Image (cartoon, rainbow, N blue to C red; front, side, top):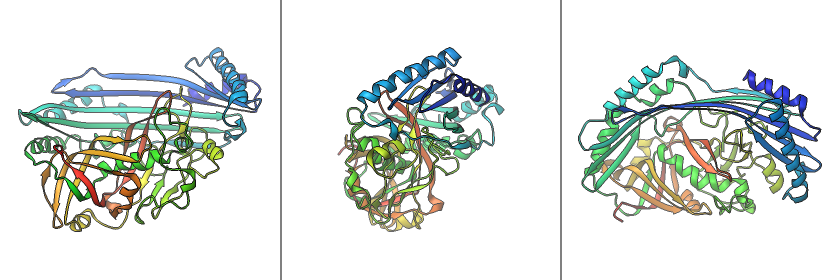
Length: 480
């Protein structure tokens, strides 16, 4: 972080006259190791460092990015930002005066019990070799792999108003996959942390069960080959946290992004069925639906102390007892729309500007155990781990598929079913919510590939949720 602070001081000394400026400096490194079918894949290592300069002058707002962190490179970026500010003053869709100014002094660092560097590459590959070998239990396993990834981001935001926000995020991501085939039937299962991303160090290996989970993953892939197809019809549905992640993400998170509601995303990622007049009165779900923006959950992917505009983060309800309260909009979008929001203006890298993104979007726990939810189902399906997703341009009609299903009859789990799918319309689906798991059943997970914006930005998004029960959902199998 010290090298970023030194760069920020140099920029402050050469910054041009402006009503306000900020510089967001980012240094990141990542490494990915994988063993597939018993063979170590080439190791992938990436390093990046750069700065985004934002400048307000003459009634306009502009920004420019550079990987040249010399005095000359920083000065050139400032000049480009000033030129864009001049253009925005004439042609912009909003007043530059709406842009938030930050004077906050904040720090954040991911909790890491076991640093990435505390284990050699050779030892990591040996670990992955053993985990991969555990998946090869049958000749019908036709593809299998184990992996371990690491990503660290150091970010410093400094502003002309005295703001100084230093944040470090660190992620360690293990995972397993097994693909089974028999004739025309192919089934896949993930585990070992593949769908359970959090912040942290190598302690995530044990937390996710990378060493121990291989046998279960392979056996379930094989069992699905002979399982019957998921039944079709209007059935009760229990979604485990592994699938709740995508359900929350696609049918609550994206529709509530304020820039999407304002129309900024319609040419690329689509619009939203949500309109500004809905906030404060619209029944988004049943009275059991409570959804929060919560940057304070330890280990969750997007936990932190401020967004990339420099607004401090605070926990807030987006949906309370089913009623829509506020959108996912940063300070600039809030000022444009005249609506309350949250601190979620985020950028994916040093060469991207912050836009409204999900961060930690969580469904608050209820008071039922998973066993209690199952006991209330006469006929239905329990679904685990997302396999496919599709949702329309207004983030309203959706269809999801899962890797594994279990039939529920008369309040008890029965056998596996393969190719479980379901479809619905966002608000109608959430209004069918009839049971929410308790705190003990909640799992902190997330999405590592959320894309949005032009040019595209892919960010990490946290989602925590318990298992949930939905009534009379359109469920179908692979042969429907």
